[in-house]
Amino acid sequence: MNDSNMMCDLETGVCGAPGEEAVQEIDLNQVEKNVKLYYVTDPICSHCWALEPVLGRFVQEYGQYFHMETVMGGLLPGWKGFADGGNGIQKPSDVAEHWREVGEHSRMPIDGSLWHSNPVQSSFPPSRVFKVIQNSHPGREAEFLRRAREAVFVFNQNIGEDEILVNIVDQMGLDGKERVSQAALESAQDLLEADFQLSSRLGARGFPTIVMVNGANKGVKVVGARSLDTYVQALQQVTAHELSPKKRPRLSQLVNDEGMLFSKEIEIMYDIEANAVEAFIEAELPEGSYRVQAIMGELYVDKLN
Image (cartoon, rainbow, N blue to C red; front, side):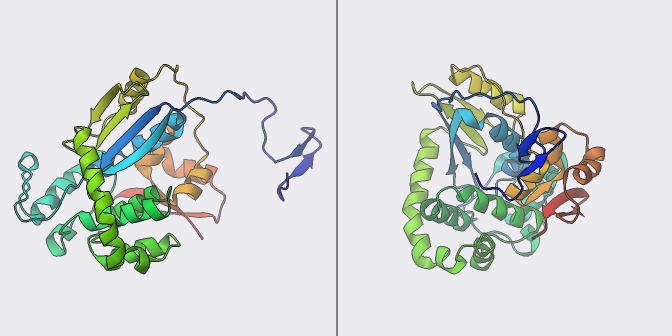
């Protein structure tokens, strides 16, 4: 083992990584992942953005019990003939008020003014790029989806436009022009159609929908953005394992992995109140490694490069 941070400590009697606890509980038993979790979603689904804090904690604590597959559902093919009667949405400008309400209720920041100035015409372009990333760089599609959502919800960027999508992919360290080229997107259409068919078979009629299925093809469907307990209970229904949550990562690791976290995500992940978030960040993160800013009245932290 080669680690430049290894050190010998006279007080603890340890030669190894600093900060190791003296007595630690370990479990060498491998939990068999016999549950498939399908997350049916869409890049411009506001309630999916609102679910991020709870889903993030659920995956961190219970991800060892399931394989997760994100499925594109096709929320907005285009505005011609589109209507969402339940939310009073018939034209782009109607979305702005709906997004504002979701943002205020969830405290996941949502601007939404682009629906008046430069509305997204279809959610299919970012969905196709998601499939391109998923196909060419397996495991990084979740990163793309997160960045796309930050762009459209928080920073008011039209993720239906190629220029914005190229920039998001570039910031991931990939070739944006190649991944958002006409040829790449055309090749992804069949993959996207397969997702739509799977979404239909899963019975997903709204987003977010999470379906958990075990090895016996018995499952449970959770519709809408629900509480952490709801997802834990649903998982317990489809697995024989007695569920035991993993230890949550330190904030420093989470910020390093995610890049940007909003106050509500930190509150949910670490069970703290909103007024304690800034002090928690200061205590957990090394000085000079991060910055704390506010947008739409909500704090967020991101790492400094």
